[in-house]
Image (tube, rainbow, N blue to C red; front, side, top):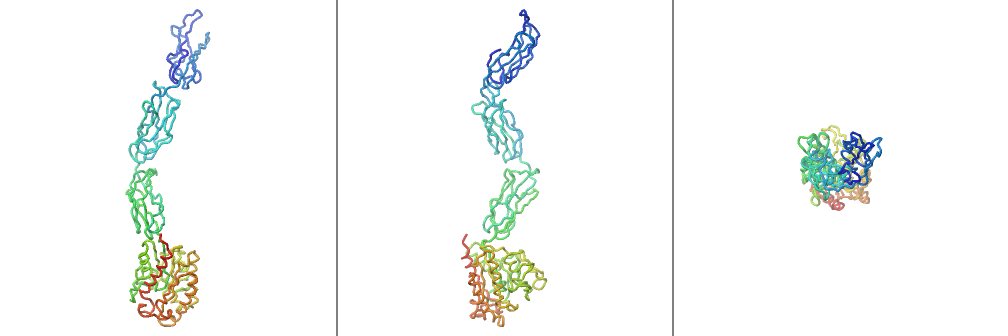
Amino acid sequence: GNNQTATAGAQVVTPPSVKVTDANGNAVLGFTVVFAPAAGSGTVAGGSAITNSSGIAAPASWTLGSTPGAQSLTATASGLTGSPITFAATAVAPVPAKIVLNGGDGQSARTGNAVATLPSVKVVDAADIPVPGFTVTFAVASGGGSVTGATAVTNVNGFANVGSWVLGGSAGTNTLTATAPGLQGSPVTFTATAVAAPPVAMAINGGDGQSATAGTAVSIRPSVIVTDAQGRGVFGVTVTFSIRSGNGSITGTTQATDASGIATIGSWTLGLGGNSLFAQVPGLAGNPLVFVASGTARVQIVTFGDSNTDFGFSGNTNNVLAASYVSNNTASRLDPSAPNNSLQLAGKIESRWVANRPAQTIRVVNHGIAGTSTGTGRNLLLSPNALEAVGGVTRFEGEAMAIAYPWSGGESVSAPFPNGAIFRVQSFVPRASDFLYISMGTNDFGAGLTNAETVTNLELMVDKWIALGISASHIIVTTLPPREAGAQSSTIPALNSAIRARFGPKGVMVIDIAALTSNNDGLTWKDSSFHVGDFLHYAEKVRDAIADVIVTRMLQQTPQP
């Protein structure tokens, strides 16, 4: 049994043996001999051996160490001449021949999660001796999912395992292969079953509370997350999206959750104003979810003027058919959510804009104001004038600039305001693309204001807008039409001259209503076709003409998108 050669990790063919004799060379029966391998020289079975009747003792086997090279084994017989005896052997590297499945097959795990037991293989030679240092490649074969540690090297015992195996997002069978090129049994295939956990709840994942220009899609597509009882995302749950409110549109209304439990709508294009969506999965906690968004107009204009701006008359008929929602005229006052009436200046601006640009790109807010005054500027109509402050904010700032929005006029309960104060809820914060229309002053004389004071008040409003960084070219003021004969009408020509002189040089557009309605700069009407029979409110054709001029100006100042 000396000087044998065997595969590293394998047994030598002939177990090493020794013979014990007495002084006369006779075999000694029953003497103990201890066989022990040197460090790195493997192991023995039956290392404490008893001599037989022939005096021979041998271990049951000697398995060499796993490292190729010289190895040794000693046989020790305490007190005997010649002890210890050393046996030499040469270990040669095993030749890889086969790859076999070791463990990790036939498991199950939740979709999108890793299996508990790492799939592993064993590489051996033809005699099933483990082969260390051999490279095995693991790869997902079906079912999706992913692995880490895909390239593994067998250890001293010939074993190699994948770093992790995460199953795919769909319920069903997943397979993984372990490939060792050129070896019998390659590739080895592992099978696992992905099991979907039942969903119990849904919540908003992203895309709520956005704003975008009406007619365009929000930048973040609304998404929901569906989870199981442990708060983990559930794959493959169908979520249905639908329009809840607003004039927007959506694509991809039915979406399935991904491996993280998230379902995302295809797109959401907003309508003008408030928009909202439902996301629904019947039976889940949180169902239905609601997403909200605001569709902003590409261009906005506030019409801030006296009753000629506020009211809508049909032709020359002296009957108020529509009024702004903050109007003193309760009989024709519109609801804040009602569309602008086609008889009012606001409605006429809208219709002309829509004839040239998409409807979703404009927003017109109509607010009627009796006069320009400040302080306790409430006239007989009991509503605050343009520069009267309530809570430290003037009416102009509250309604045209959205400061302290929503702003309350503080109206007390009265015949014009049977429900008391009206909150201004249609205000908007002006942007560089927006416009301001101011037309008032004919009522100021009756309130005790001079023409100079009226022009100063108008200029204060204009300057507040310009101070926001908005171009003066986006501001429109008007001269004023006649009033009924009397002291008030006599002041209007001088007031109109002052308006032209003050605002033209500022770059503000001045619409000359006086030139349209009067031959003497607002002292008297051209003829009865220009008013509604009361010598106070101009006829519908005047609002038509004003709207034409306003929209032409807005189109010139607003580039096509």
